[in-house]
Length: 241
Image (cartoon, rainbow, N blue to C red):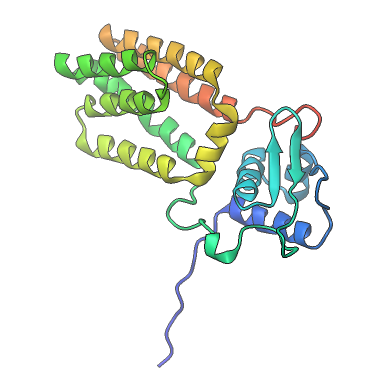
């Protein structure tokens, strides 16, 4: 009796990355040359620029391209054996960490504004104190990312809805486990970006402390939209646009 084979769900950015990698291996984009502009790739492939951005970061992780922020994206040199990409044994791409960073952020945008609105209404004094402590820690450390996660986790804990808190925690874990997300942050999350995030956290915290759910919702929405905008900044004025 024949059996069915498992069907793998391939992310859109993975399909785009595979297509560009194939063109690189075929010699259409020689080593050292700059790839076409992000806008042009999006138009040719009929996909969003966010998907192109994710594909390019995936290709960088795999050794096909080099991202030079401020300049553009260039085809990397092939390995000593003349081939591109990582050796098969070094391939780190695997489920479930291949969910694109923009999908993850868009999901946060659906969940976290409502979560913080509930936290402003339901959070206990101890829970609000925990949010304040996480926020204060962000300005006193060389690892603001950990305190950023603590801030958002403390808000989720204060929302009074265990299912919503668990869903947000899961999205954060997927983000942490995503190599594409990590590499994207490495390129674009600078000291100035953390300063902007801290100011946005200021407004979120103030609304929670004032027990103002509407203001809290808007502040969180603006914060997450700001993150999306910062991660979509151009790689370089002369290359990716």
